[in-house]
Image (cartoon, rainbow, N blue to C red; front, side, top):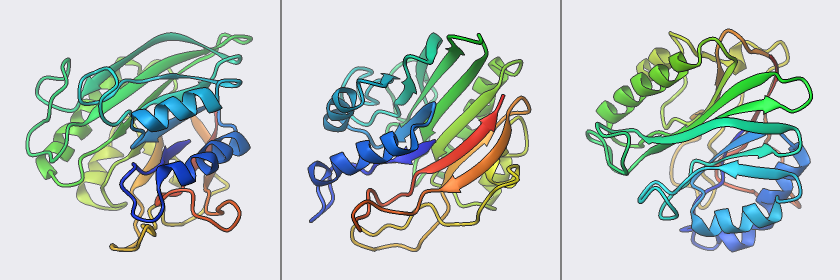
Amino acid sequence: MTFNIRCADVKGVTWEERRGLVSQQISDVLPDSVGLQEAHTGWMDYLIEELADKYDYIGVGREDGKREGEFTSIFYLKEKYEVKDSGNFWLSETPDVPSKGWDAACTRICTWAKLADRKTGKEYVHINTHFDHRGRQAQLKSVYMIHEKAKEFEALPVVFTADLNILEGSDIYLKMVSSLLKDSKHLAADTMSCLTFHNAFPKKFKDYVIDYVLVNRHVTPKVYKVITQGIDGRFVSDHYPVYADCEI
């Protein structure tokens, strides 16, 4: 699952007001792993504690590689999976240190984890990120970097989750899905067509599909779903969670 949970700067709808809704939505869906975007330190402290009975996490803050700034964290079912390897890198010319790349407006980070089922031994790699919203060159270079990371694990099932900040069908999207990774939306037998960004806090932009679950050839998506229902009549975020039920 991928879920942009929306950062703190929402006038009239604070993250403190929404945090219980976010943790409830994750608990209701109960994905094996979920890639988050816009999870700042306050979000992380809350979710780590709130989800602790079922989930552990991988991730660091993008600004200092520790706790500062957005986490693109991956939460995974800790009793089901063991972390065999994990890491973080920055979408920039200097990926090993906190840095802003090319024409990006913001520092951008990517988090990945190799997870092994404790019972079966089956492994898969989850890669999660949040592309820049302005820099076209940064977006193009980030596509290349994600492909290179996916190639490192091409013998294993790979799931890539992201708020890509690029539109479905755009030239950059087509580059993203033209190589190792394909869009689960168009592979699953049980699928749907729905926006993922509704921007209702308050509404300033158009509705878009910018959140994705992509997979490599070792993953077979069965169900693709955009979770549009809120909780108690309230939006959980300005993005809908996107869920894919996959076979590896």
